[in-house]
Amino acid sequence: MPYNGASNGSGGGGATGGGGGATIVVTEGPQNKKIRTGVQQPGENDVHMHARSTQQQNQQQALMNKSNDDLRRKRPETTRPNHILLFTIINPFYPITVDVLHKICHPHGQVLRIVIFKKNGVQAMVEFDNLDAATRARENLNGADIYAGCCTLKIDYAKPEKLNVYKNEPDTSWDYTLSTEPPLLGPGAAFPPFGAPEYHPTTPENWKGAAIHPTGLMKEPAGVVAGRNAPVAFTQQGQAQGAVMMVYGLDHDTSNTDKLFNLVCLYGNVARIKFLKTKEGTAMVQMGDSVAVERCVQHLNNIPVGTGGKIQIAFSKQNFLSEVINPFLLPDHSPSFKEYTGSKNNRFLSPAQASKNRIQPPSKILHFFNTPPGLTEDQLIGIFNIKDVPATSVRLFPLKTERSSSGLIEFPNISQAVLAIMKCNHLPIEGKGTKFPFIMKLCFSSSKSMNGAWNNATSEGMIEKENEVEPKVEIYN
Image (tube, rainbow, N blue to C red):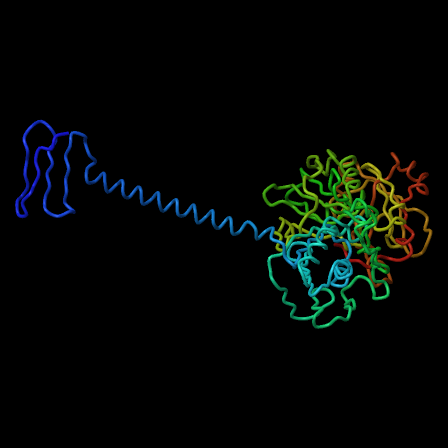
């Protein structure tokens, strides 16, 4: 393009060339140049907008780069190997103490410190003296059961570089660099020192996961309190279905954890029950094993309860329920979450106890036992009337012992009988001359009529000797 004019004077205001080409106007100062050519140039506002846009893009790109850098820095922290391991104990039906963790970890390397906490279920941190020892422990113990069928270990690398132990406590924490003496079990432990669990040492030859070591890392502790005892079976790792079930259709205004426990405990041990805040009338129940859930689904799904609707029961996708620290309150002001692993009202706590329970579908005739020996039929009917579940007839069995009584009670229909179990199972009944109340126990009868039930009373298999020998001292949950 021909050059048509230019300014060459220091004090001139500029120069304009003729012709039909471009016109270039140059004013004094390098900051005030305006160029007009045959091609339209962006205006001053456009230039400023473009500059701002570019600046914003640069800032966004810088933030993205910083975010990516942060992610790159943070990502390895969750998986970075560390000499401290985080243990999560799933289905902790036995007490987890410092001594228990030390026994299973010590064969893999020197343990410096152990801290146990129960903020979300049962968890612990174990500090080894070096990374190799921690890695060996994680590779060999992750997925293992401390005891057969329960106390399953989920192990991850922890983030802290050192554990702080403020006081050596057998149940919560121990610093082995200060005291190498094995901690004695405290008063809160469930088994005495002479009944401490026996450890089965594992080696690479005999251990590569729980499937090859089905008996657990340790023998069940001797002398365990009955309520702490493990059920006959528990959910095994890798099992297709877990031990948690969903219960729908419960009466929102009257249902609570104890009433639901009273019903489902007839089919297996109950570990935890949690009502959902976002779904009224819905609860989650962790049973002792998947077999117990199958029994509940088979016998309780779609059964009517009282004058309300039917309840539905199905397997949950969750394998276990975590502890709820601050549960919300239900309409009856009871907590929406409750732990039942230590309840003496669980009926499958040992093989001998489990063998006395006959699994029956719901019926309108109930079998009751562990009631005061002087209890009359009218008194029993009065008890159920107070609970708004009136019975139609009662029959007391001849006393086999002077310590307790048992018999049969009939209701108008199955729905009322189910409601009676939810309201009155494990109901405390005062007895004459006894310090503690009798805890009445109920279950479904296998007979279709009272006469048939009377004739088959001896074959019910539900009169537990330990319940007839002495009154239960556990107060109603």
